[in-house]
Image (cartoon, rainbow, N blue to C red; front, side, top):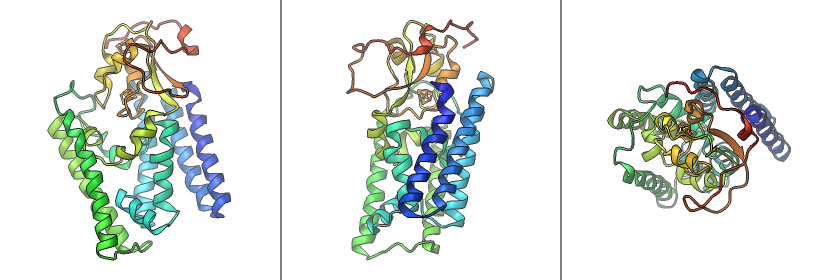
Length: 316
Ligand code: SF4
Ligand code: SF4
């Protein structure tokens, strides 16, 4: 399954490019989604070709190619407000382009296929956060209730837009200085709070886990995602290397020991748990996700990799 990921990524984005080009007549979508598909495909290809301990570099390459293109070219140069407030404003305006298409593809419908892969492979905020020194967080530090902050953030953003739209009569002006100001101010706040939280909680992805409003949109479709990491119960030795590697501090081992897919909607599909497992007990599967199974009630998944022979354990 994992070997086909680069081709799947390029195929999906090529299909999106063609559909949008045909629907709108704008060749821009061919270049835009063609580039994004190639960048992610290249990152995934590198991921597969590099030695196990360096595979994360492939993901970083994709993050920088896509994240910097979207932030600097589409955002700063083309002056498209890609912040969540921009999405709300464009959607209220009935403007089906730029920011709205980005949210529909990456954050609303895309997660039905690739879960929160946007967060793992493309986000321009996370491309910086992943450079910080707390790549492997310590086991949960008792901040799980902080996860509600993201819903408060989402409500505040929506409330601000509603106030401006209906209370102040604010209307979006395409490619204006106001758009650029939204984008720069929003990103400055994201980077500052993301870096601050990472140092406070000693976890690079603390912002993603607690404060970012985007998962509010992603979590439901991500739960149904076709692509997910899955555990092979008969191979798992319970060593916990996957838990230690997970940047989102998920209990991957529990899923693996039950032979389940990683059902948490906090999973960003970074695949670091797969690279960390010394027994090849984790893989990527593509299947329709059925309603929530109770822990321990789901049989082990069947995949073609199951018959592969275990590799010698490396130091966890
Ligand atoms: S469970 Fe695996 S793929 Fe998901 S966030 Fe954790 S390390 Fe990444
Ligand atoms: S690293 Fe592999 S063997 Fe160890 S607990 Fe995780 S899935 Fe099981």
